[in-house]
Length: 141
Image (cartoon, rainbow, N blue to C red; front, side):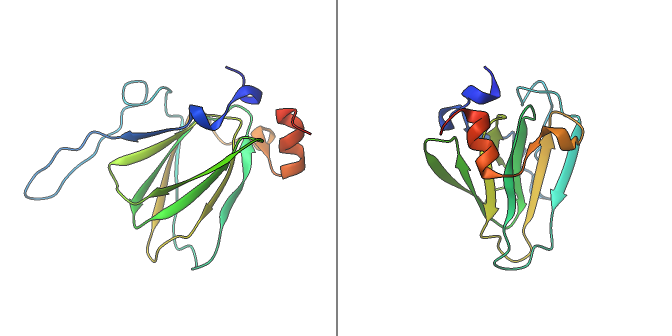
C-alpha cells in the first residue's frame, strides 16, 4: 500500500512480549519478528514540559512503533478524512504507525518517555511538516 492510500484502519495497537519476573519485568522487541519492519533507528522523547505538544507532521515512507516507556501520552492521528486519538500508558503496548498519517503527540504526563522504533534512519525529505501539504499529498482537497 502506498502512503497516500493509508487510512486510520491501518494503525494497530499491539501487545508487546512481556516476560514477568519478581525482580522486574522485561519487554524485548525484535524488528522483523515482533514488528512488520526492520528497526533502523531508535530514539526517545523525554523531559517534555507540561502542555507541550510534539509531532505535528507526517512521513512519506517511515514506519514507526511508539511506546510509552514511562508515563503516558496521547497521539492524535489524521488520515485526511478522519481523526482518531490513542492513549499510550503501558510499556508493553505499542502503536504501529504506517507512513502517510498526520500525527500529533500531546498530554504528556510528568516524567513520561516516548520510545520510537523506526524503519529508516532520519531523513528530512521524508517529513511533511505542513498540514496543507499533507492534504495535497493525500489528494484530499
